[in-house]
Image (cartoon, rainbow, N blue to C red):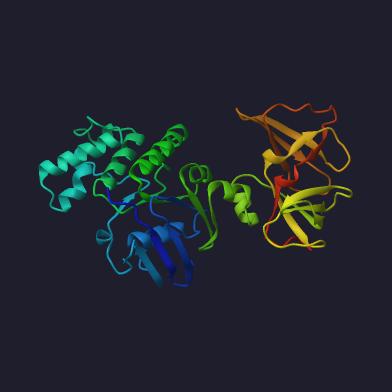
Length: 362
């Protein structure tokens, strides 16, 4: 395989008529890294991938693979591999012929392309499937064939466009790990487009969260999940409880005490990477697993348990509290003792909440 190469997008933008699909974007993907472009439909992630692949021409900026500017090169000259959501296998060809198709287009002799196709099918655990056709394969097997076909041409970068979207949940989860294993084994630079938060967190080394044609945060899965910068990121990457309040004072490194709105006497801790000071109005994001449920006590949020469901590995609680329209969600690995009146207290550790960059309500 080709040694892992980096990708650089320099001030790349794209408009379709009056609609700006992609605002000027600068992004670097390290060699051997798997980066996920994550966001809702219409956020610009697929446009970004198509510009990298050469299917769309950027209005501004450049695409650099390794040290080579490929902005003006057609797709077949960029040395990329691509796996689509629908796999795009040729139904009239056998599995072996599908995998070897790119080599055939390059003029590789039949014996050599057959050897390489078999080697790739072995890599994706489909040895012996050479003579089958697409309609004889399961969804996961078709996905592996599409992956083998993309890898056999020795691409410098592999692009994955919602590659697991057509699979059922169990198979999708299994394939997430298999794709990651192959990518690690080959030290291949990969970019995956997905709207599935779990898929992005599971498969990637870094996640670039996109909204309205721009990247709003880039970081490791842990950083993005535990330290979202905005309300959009916090709520898109799983469930988040949002609280407004006023900063009172510091509480250790990067931690602050905050008086919560509408909760006299309720003071909570939160982390902040941005500079803040006492008197600042802030929004806090708290993940459900950070909330602790217990008997009502001083300084706790008083809440009523509205519903409780078991989700296999944890219990999910839906709670309500006076003066708040949105429900509060809390997760616990064990079932909590709930009083007959359903009234409980909620708290979190000082590092269990993060201060967002969004402006809170005045």
